Image 1 (cartoon, rainbow, N blue to C red):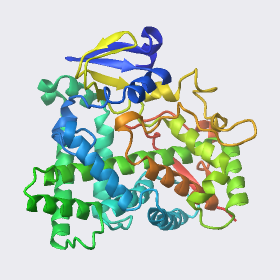
Image 2 (image 1 turned 120 degrees about the horizontal axis):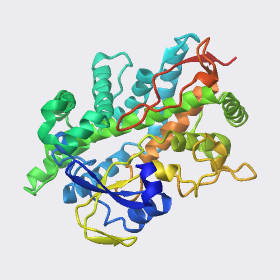
Image 3 (image 1 turned 90 degrees about the vertical axis):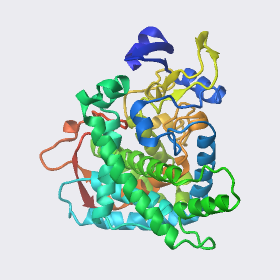
Image 4 (image 1 turned 30 degrees about the horizontal axis):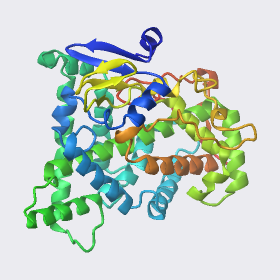
Length: 438
């Protein structure tokens, strides 16, 4: 689609199967649609497999009033349980200590970091949703992570894209059945969990997002009000948060470690700044404003990694004439985030890893309007504040304690920066050596 935009311009129509879509490309076009016309581009389109998974409930793929109520509740609950506050920062810091010990256990030998990073990041969102954390080796936790990872990757696979275009030929593709079976197992766990929470529920001692939802559910039942606080919404909200809260941040951190191995000079500069500003103390979020280079590197990892290149699709809520094109209500919209994060009019070196994109001539951090990894507008990522905190604390804690190098026999030139295919685009599997700093 990015190549098509170079031929057909920033707004063009394509047809995939029976579905007509309008693609928006480039920073100015995407921003104008999602921010300046936020209400008009605030819906989700009908996507076969997404609808079969969520059935219109939850946050990510829900619509209208259900989406507004669930989004409002979830944002409030995330804040209540620490998003952007010292309480969640303390939890992330404690998780960093566990993660460091896990890295140390490899004693500088090569290891693959997908499971370990998913476990660390997963525990943060689990602490908010369930009010607890898991040991990394816990079989239930690992099973949940596996189910979520599989579904996120399969959601962007060619067979699923074909199924969404031609659902009547689903029997030819088969992969969607795997996704739905994973969903069934995942939803089963979630329902069992909130039944356990219900048994122990104390409205004066709420410990998790599930508790808050169940208290609200009970209140609305008592008042006999028409309610969106039913078990189906709770199940899908928890699923949405677990998938979005774990996969994207974990994937970004894995890209960060790969890029530090690929560019050791940049890794050394980050470590020099950590040593100068933090020393051997525990990294805290307050350090970030004093660490412009590290902040720039983290932002550039997000831009370069481009982990949700096609964004999550939108749909128009009204008929709208946009940039001279008439777009009817209900049109499937693809706001290409990759075209924003690689817009040649906005970035000096769009296809290179270049932290100076976020630094001025004096080395101070600068915000860039075209930095949009969390999307924009009404459907912007709910967990942006949490993700930024996690990225800074996990990244600095690891770089403070370890030097990342490729395994023996692999040069930095050998490291492959080609992303894998999926709904998100993680790096191809790789091994790294985490060498303890003296």
